[in-house]
Image (tube, rainbow over all chains, first blue to last red; front, top):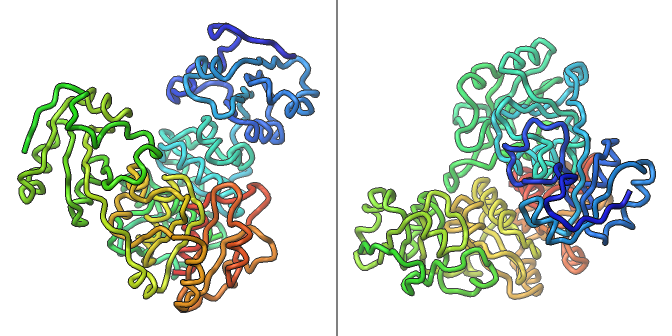
Length: 257
Length: 257
């Protein structure tokens, strides 16, 4: 259902207002897909569209996908208007609002063999990159702690290249969920800079493994380090203080896949 | 030499004007360090300061470093003024302008055992991330092609955590430089998505290795793929089309270190 929009204050555009502010948008029952490619991934992942806001150039590409959703409003506007509504420059002007899918259930996650568990990874690009590499290298899912970035925030989806719409993930209720993983047979493997930890190349991966990654800057908390069964490190030169958390995730995910 | 600044149009601030525009600033004989940590790294790397622009809060931290440079002007201003001059929000308000150091010489690079060679990696964050992981994992240097991002652009330095000030790097004159690497005994190893390539885990690293990484989106050009001695791939699931180039660099750099 195509609707031309000429007024940035049109109340029908509420889903697309103020998209730069991740805090403002937190806890909402929908997510925003940015760009044709991510919108297509959202449809492919079976997400239910609420409305789209795009430049006319994208209508033809999206027509086959929208056939199944004749009642979904497709707001058509200029690039300038889209920028005014959303509050940022929307690269090539296409936004989709979709119902937020349910997080993965514990049943599914506890049956997995390889999980990544992020403690307060707050950067959306890092969270998306971790999910992208986990999906690409065949890991089964990702867990994020209470204060960590939302894998379905616009920029996280984008940096995951849409993988956060397909790879099972859920938010932890609290640190007690680490015990739940242990009870299900997972060995908790902490990524740490400590020189006393086992070098990654010498570490033999167990059958069921949950990789614990710490927050940007300071790494895993003492509580999570204490909860871990094994401490493993990527030996480094003294030219750098640390590796980026998504970089460490990539190396661990490859070496322990 | 501390100088209080109250006018954003002060001509003495020329080094700090319009820092958001990487193109505008290209080819200049200086680089900008952003943030106290990177400024400190620039001093530690022996770079020569031209001037600093910062909030008064940083003066005490920088005093010991500036003792050796009594003639270097230290412009002190409010956060708002710094933002107005530079054109972006300078996190915690400290900028340093330094003489651009010379690129690494071929003599040094050709003696190396492990180099990363980037073909048109245009994103500054990716370029910085590649340099950071190369430095951290003990690779000897990085080469960037003619159109690739500048490792000394502000954001590249930042995402390298300052490593691009310490790890030897240089820009290629042209594709003929690949032949120069071969003549010096390097085996050129192309990172590719091709399913016909050797899986990384089965690849035995030669004594001298230059890892070729392609541009974001389309990867290595046909010319570079043809120039490579070996084609190597990170096997992936079908949940993602590709890995980010910095992610691939991290995995290769770890596996072939």
